[in-house]
Amino acid sequence: MHLIRNSFRYAGRQHRDGIVKALKPVYTAPSEQAAKDRFDEFKAEWGQRYPAILQLWESSWAEFVPFLEYDVEIRRVICTTNAIESINARYRQAVRARGHFPNEAAALKDL
Image 1 (cartoon, helix red, strand yellow):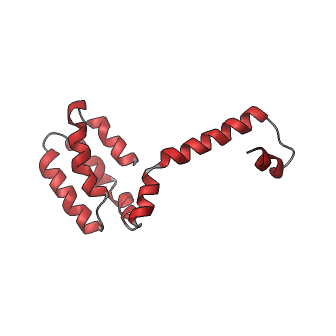
Image 2 (cartoon, helix red, strand yellow):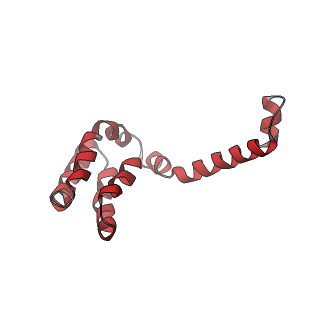
């Protein structure tokens, strides 16, 4: 997800929707080879205009490939971190508002 967000730093606002549509087949591909093929298509379409995005993906490809080994359902959960981050923020807010807890059980009871 961070790789996709970072890609937008190099893209113009008017092209963001097109870039999202072109990158989606890359990160939803069933295998590494399929992702590589989709990335080559992305390169052909957007490479001339945004070479920095290509460089970003190519330099991060080794860290991206393990993501493709997960099942589609697990990938969806990984990509939707906003719900998880929201829960964690609520936990931090509750703990911060309460202050000090005598033990872990008291903190869990409050949460």
